[in-house]
Amino acid sequence: MANENEILMEDCCRYYSIETSFVQTLFDQGLVRLEYHDESYFIHHDQLALLEKYMHLHYDLEINMEGIEAISHLLKKIEHLQAALRQQKIR
Image (cartoon, rainbow, N blue to C red; front, side):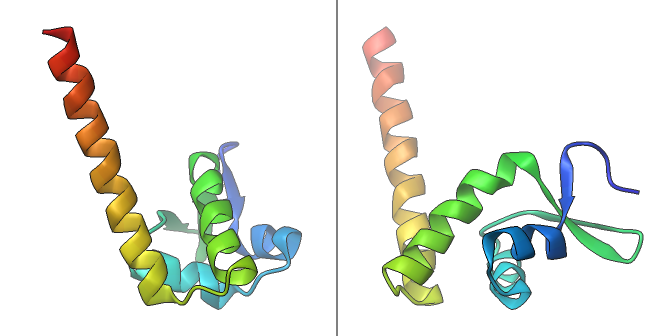
């Protein structure tokens, strides 16, 4: 049974007009988290912003999955460096 913070993956894909295989590939690559219970996949609300970012990259900018992975990796590095910089400023 899904909790109130989860959306059935198929419903989410229908809402965004995207293929479930796209979301499944993002999950397989570790780019979004899905929960599996009651024989279905669910996406948590806190993952929707990431999903929308990846949808924009893939469908609007036509970036393939390898490119999305590279962009995601670089963005995470930037966030990590920014956090380290903020930490240095505090000291």
